Every structure is written in structure tokens, then in C-alpha cells.
Amino acid sequence: MSKVVLKGITKKYGNNTVVNSIDLTAENGKLISILGPSGCGKTTTLRMIAGFEKPDGGEIFFDDKEVGAIPVNKRNIGMVFQSYALFPHMTVEQNVAYGLEQRKTPPSEIKERVAEALKMVHMDEYAKRKPKQLSGGQQQRVALARALVIKPDVLLLDECLSALDKKLRVEMQVELRRILEQTGVTTFFVTHDQEEAMTLSDKIVVMNAGKIEQAGTPFEIYEKPATRFTAGFLGKANFFEGKALSFENNKVQLETENGNITIPAQNAVVGQNMLYVVRPEKIRFVSEGENGIKGTVEHVTYSGNISTCTVVCSGKEIICEVQNAVSGQRPQKGQNVTLDWDSAGSIEIIGGVN
Amino acid sequence: MKGDKRQVMTWPAMAALFIFAVFPLLIMLFNSFQSDGGTGGFVISNYVRFFSKSTYLKLTGRTIFNSVMVTVISLIISYPLAYIMAKKLKGLKNIVMILIIIPFFTNQLVRVYSWLIFLQDGGLLESILNSIGLVDGALGIMYTKTAVIIGLVHAFFPYMVITIYMALERMDNSILEASSSLGASKFTTFRKVIFPMSMPGVVSGIMIVFVPCLGTFVEPRILGGVNGTVIGTVIEDQFFEIYGWNFGAAIAFILLAMVLISMAAIGKWGKRYDI
Image (cartoon, rainbow over all chains, first blue to last red; front, side, top):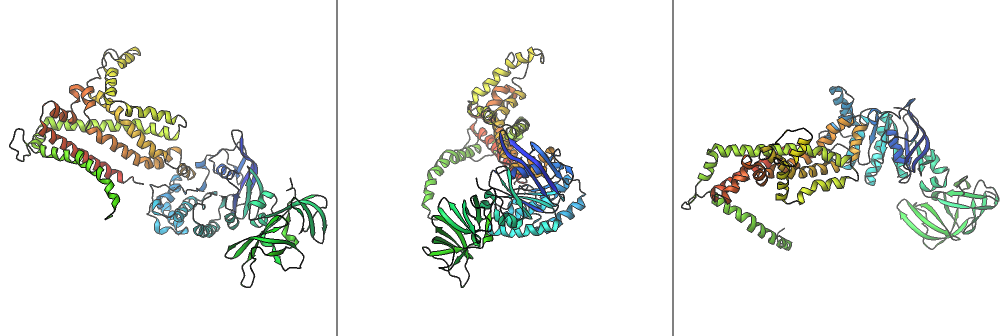
């Protein structure tokens, strides 16, 4: 279990810079998600921490030890692959014992630790089975046990839940959280699933085009996105962008490409271009006659607990989510509505205006 | 499946199989229990004759020996070749594959006579070896068991390369990465993961080389001369030279039994490597 520090890590394939000088710190025992669209360099970053790829620049530290020159098989990492990568010709037990055998652990201890690891992932009953006799979720557990049994300095998870169906994935997320808390191993988790990153992580690192857009707690990333990309990638977002024409009583009037619009905001510099992001669940419907933004409901998507509505306000589409409470009235298509939100709901993205 | 009209579509194939394979085989089986110029009664003398003469048993031994040698040599050549093709070569892979497959498309006689020209005394190989000083004078390979085995290896090893190559090729790279992430060296990964996982390919390779090798007669005859006599050539002689069809049929069925037994044995042994 180590603190992991990446300093100025760069990776190039030919002229293509896949990872561009990133700095990143993972505190001991924390779970860090690396989140981003495909091709953003997140898997390459993980593979550099593992040692499968050699950085073209920068340093990687496990605690105070620079590991750049240490090959994968000496680096003491545990890795869970997207395809699980279990050895198909070995039983579950043999799979989990493999890493310990490489470390010349005495057989009696191997037996004990394998049993312990399988118990931890609730797979002790399946010890004698071959991987092909297991379901995806079970293979996943075995892969996790195999990676953890060697007591790695760092655990690396490469999109390892994405092959599971939704229900199983949520179950495994809870399970994973429990197991990682139990073992206290520093973990990097690569995913493109923002919901998964939110639920699991102590810290989320959002990557885009080989660079880190933002790093912070799930709360910070969602509630205080620093860039337009982060705001748009994590969760749904309404962007309001334009020159501030006036600002008073926590209302800013913006000159947008769809005409002028007045929205709540806590801060604005009159005469400057501003960019705000508003999360759909912060928006509420207020009764007619109250102050707010007037619009027409164009589309309602019912998804059980909430309804997602697209409201067109003077040419601009605003997405808002309402709870489907017992007493509440659900907006209907074609209905004229008035929208409002607290001024704190408008997050100003500084330097987000191009 | 009762009443499934689609079954009708298999009838032509079934009929062809019966007329061209099962029926002739039954005739041969009947023949093998007939005595030459006999009364049409049922005799086992043809089989007795085979098993009571040491010459035939010796030939059986030689046939099996040839097949084992060809299989082992093919395996030694094919595994590294398939490994390099699957894991190391990128663009060159297809070219190498074509070079390996060429013997498939070559007429058997052309292939065998090429070896004859290459191996014979005063032939190409001899002059090459003479000129670099490895061998002095005549080569003496032609018309020996060695020549037969060389010819058979050339004919059969591509099958082995292909089966092993396919087993190695479809191996998920992340499994190998998993092995090294768990602390295994490259050599250990090969020994504990790659090799066991390629065993199904090795087993089918052995099957596909060893079994047809038992029945060959062209290579042994042309490249081996008198030293090349094996069961296959004996059967051919019985049918085309001596016209001892009944005895020939009996040997053919003994060969068939050997084929079936070795297939069953290899198959059973291969079961343990099932993935």
C-alpha cells in the first residue's frame, strides 16, 4: 500500500501525444477514478503506472521510490483487466495462487491466503471450478481476489465493471467499495462511466485529450466543475453563455446567441463574456406570475423516480429534472411553464469562454 | 426434429456418403474375409496371415516409427514458427503463411519428385554441401528412411503450424499481461500460461499429422525405394501389382483400426488440455 505520485508523465505514439505531462497524486489507501471519453489517455496512464507502457517523460513514484525502471513483474501491482484475463486452463484456486507462487510463498501459506482471498470475494465455494464455468460477475470477483491476494502496493482496475449488466454492476460497485475498504489498498480505477466514478471514488480525475481537466472529490467535480468539458462530461448540464448586460439582485442578463436571457447568478462582471452551468435538478417549476424564465415544455421523458423535461425558452433548450412525488404535478408536453433556481445553482466557469 | 421438412435437404449428402464411402467400405470388409480363389465362405486367413508373419509386423513397426518421427520433427519445427508468426511478426505474417501453405497447393508428385532431384546423389543438396565442405562426396540420403521422413515432414508440417498458430493467435493478450502483473517472468509466462493454453492446438496438430501419416505410400515409395516399404505401400502392391485384393483389404482394415485407435488415444490424452 503506497502513495502514488505521477510527475509530468508524457506518452507519445509517433507524433501523437496520448498523455501530455500530467501530474497526479493518489494518497495512501484512496480510490482514484480516472474518467474520460475513449482516447483521452486514461488507459495509457493506467498502463504506465502498471509498467506495461514506458513513459516518454516524467516520473512515477510509489511512496518515495521511483518505479520507472522497474519492469511490470517486479513492480508489485495488482491489476484487474476489462476482460478479467483469468487463466482458462487453471481452476479458480490456481488462478488466485499464481501470484503467490511467483513470490515463492510457502505452499501452506499460499493455501491459507488463497482461501482467505476467495472468502473475501465470496467465491470460496467455487475454488475448484474453471473460469468458463463461472458467470461474468463471478469471474470478476476471482480476478479481484487474484490481484489482491499478493498484497499489491497499488491496485489497478481497467474498466473492469463495464462488461457486466447494470444490476450486477451496481452490486459489484458496492462489493468493490467494501473489499477496498477492508484491504486499504491504493486503487486506480479507469472508467468512462461517470456514475460509477461518482459512487466509487474518493477522488475523480477527469481527463480529456491527454490532459487532466480537473481533479477533485466527486462533489467538487459535479458541483464545482472547473471547465466546460468537465461540466458537460459529468452529469447533464445546461450552459448559459454570453455577454453580461446587467447584474442586479442576483440576476444576470446575458446577451446570448438566442437573444437576451435573464438567469439567477451570484456573480457577474457587466460587459464581459460569462459562462454558467446549471444542473437540471437545481431547476424548479414555479407558478405562473412569479418571476422566472418563461418557456414551453417540448418533451418529457419519464424514468420512474424523475421526469426529465426539455423546456424551450426563447429558442434555448433547457433540461430540467423533477421528482415524481405523489402530490407533485408532472409537466405536460406543450404546457407553458416558468422556471427558476437559486442563484447558487448557476456555477460560473471562469475562463470557460473561448 | 420429427416431421422437420428441412431434413430432406440432408438426404442427397447422406446418399452420396453411403454410395461413395460406406458401401465401398462394406464391400472391402466383405472381401477381407474371403480367400483367394475360394468358395465364397467366410475365412479369417487374411488376418491370420498378416499377424503371423514377422515381415508384416516389422512393417507395422516401421510405419508407426515413421509417423512418430514425422510428428515429433513437425512439432519441433512448427511450434517456434507458429509462435514467432503469432507473437512477433506483424505485416510479414501473411507472407510467411503463404509460404507455408504453398505445399498444399502443389501436386503431390511434383513435390515428391522435387525432393528426389534435390536429395539424390549428384543432386543439388549434395553439390551445395560439397562446396561448403560439410560433406565429402556422395550424400547417400536418397532411398533411405531419412529421405522418407524429410518428404513426409514437408508434406504434413504446415497442418501443425496452422493449428498451433491458431491456438496462439486467439490468445487474449491481457492474459499474458495478467501473468506478468502477478510477478511472472517472460519465461514463466510461456511455461505456465502460453504453452498450456496452446496445447489444444498442439493436440490437434499431432492428430492431423500422425494419423494421415500412417497411411501414406507415395513419399515412402518414391523417396524410400526398397527402404521405404510401409503398410501403405504393401496395400498398394496388393491391389495394383499382385492383385491380392482380399489380403490387401484385410491390411487396409488393420490400418483403419490403427488409425481409429490412435485417434481415440490422442483424443483422450488431449481431453486433459481442454480449456
